[in-house]
Length: 229
Length: 229
DNA sequence: GCAAAAGTGTTCATCATACACCCATGT
DNA sequence: ACATGGGTGTATGATGAACACTTTTGC
Image 1 (cartoon, rainbow over the protein chains, first blue to last red):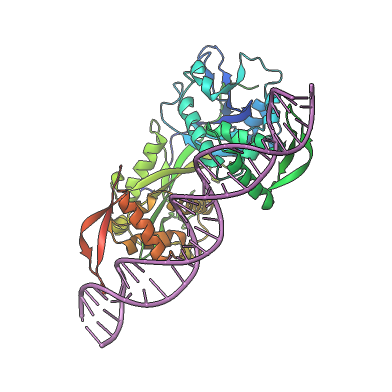
Image 2: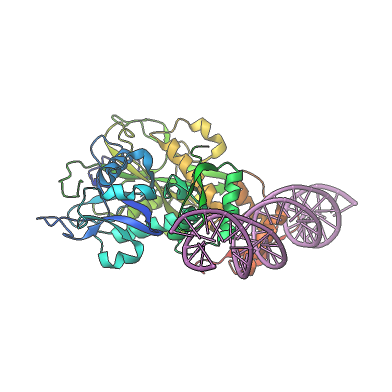
């Protein structure tokens, strides 16, 4: 029986990686950055998930918050952030032993352009999941991490309120439906979705908002999500 | 924009903690160990989750496997093991910076006695969730970890096959139902549960097994779970 | 024969799914 | 007037919840 009492001899580098999703043009995208070409850096010039290491005295969750703010230029309150999984294969970083705690984040549609503001497109990009092959292979085990994040996102979308963290602050029924479709990659029946939507209105989860959305065709009602009800 | 290129200066101790569940006498129990009283050891004499540190060159998952085998005297194949969450508050260990990757494990009912074989009951015990108050406060943030594990277990029980990792290798309908009830802490209607059970038999998830279970009353059919179908 | 536990049916409400047309608005 | 997109109803099948009595067996 081994207790906690033997002195640990091993320490490791601990980092956080972020899988940041958004929906642009009815399409699910993930934020990727390009790694620098520099002496001693593995995977030079390759695309990777944003991330960084956890500082001494810094909670891991705080590190994830900090990285999210640094990488996206957004305030924390405007994004959803959730711990995903910890990747700890001994060989996952060729330089040194590294453990990565992955978090996934959701950026609302309307803020997605802010994220890239002032960045060079050759350094950081929103990548459609359908275009991923053009960015492969990703650095480290980031493909595995990304896949796990996609699974989690798809698994949660129908059973939680995370869709509201991807859509704009006010939205029409069709706009919300389009977020669901982007995440799932398949179509939702408009009438069935409407019934579901109206149920959420009846339950007070969704609130009617002022104004209408004016487009080429008929204008639509707009709604907002009731946070922390 | 910070890239991965700055040299990390900080390293941390990384450990795994195990939340090991079993069902004994229709009651959900968790494995706790008592910490030693020794110079420099925090939380002396207090109850804690089993665990230990990750060795250099050892995958984190391998460390969880290893600890599980060490702590339970069981072979790995006989338990379910799944990563739960990573706890990384800077102050969670008073001695030094430590990050804990928590895994939860399920021990089938019939092997639960093996786990304690050769151990002193004042060192290691199966603790009913209802008796937890008598073991409180747990060391470190182990109460928080345990609560998260319970949530996960309860959340999964109805939507996955993990109940079969808690019940005996062959089981009656009532025995399986009793596992569900132990985990959820509430009763399942026998007729509804039977329908559900028979559906799994029809789907080939559960197989009829030979023999009957003989008890004080009417004897019952026994079944087994079809693994990896 | 009796105690103990196994086994079994029906009704109702809710929900997911499938499916196609008319309406309001801006140009 | 027409093009664009918004908005809506109905029928069917599956599922989950509620509810109590009879049957088999060991003693």
